[in-house]
Amino acid sequence: MLNIVLFGPPGAGKGTQSELIVKQYGLLHLSTGDLFRKHLGEGTDLGKLAQSYMDQGNLVPDAVVIKMVEDRIATEFTAKGFIFDGFPRTVHQALALDQMLLKHDLSITGMLSLEVQASELRIRLRERGKTSGRKDDQDDIKIENRIKVYNEETKPVADYYKHQDKYVSIKGIGSIASIFQLIMYELDAFK
Ligand code: ADP
Image 1 (cartoon, rainbow, N blue to C red):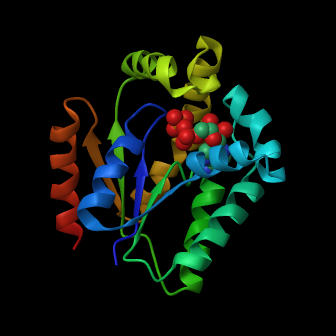
Image 2: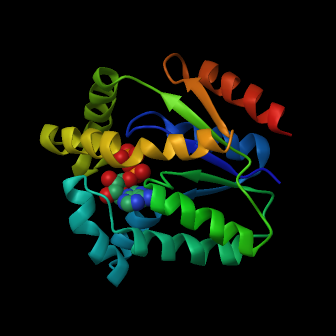
């Protein structure tokens, strides 16, 4: 089994590369952002709760995210493996993920971290905002807040995996295909 954390700032290309990884390796894509947007679209209580945080570019509280992921893992743990996208976003979430995987005798194989500088992220998010319909992509203040939240709360998650010797850095600039080549090289080395 291959359980991968795909890591990186907002706009780094996690969603795009996840799609390619799913096709090539048959892993199950677990994107907390997508799950929240699905709840939002369906008007569930969880969606309503998450909306105020998401719209401002803040993190949804850990307990809420962790419960959502735990439910998903419990129903899908027989999959070939998971690709975690947008989760864990805090060290607390990373600890919780290790614990919930352990319950099913699983563990994280490695973290792939897409490295993209902030100036490029701002351009990409703004561009995505023209078509994504996402409020958090259409406003410079919200974009800045997401980059700030990433730097302050999410970046330490990389150290968590570095300490476990599971951290791999990937240059996230270039064509989608060339970045995917780098990812495949690393994933094949995990096997
Ligand atoms: P991006 O990576 O482009 O910022 P995502 O689709 O991953 O977008 O997430 C959108 C929003 O959903 C985040 O800004 C946040 O409010 C919420 N969210 C997603 N994943 C998490 C998480 N693991 N913890 C807390 N909030 C989350």
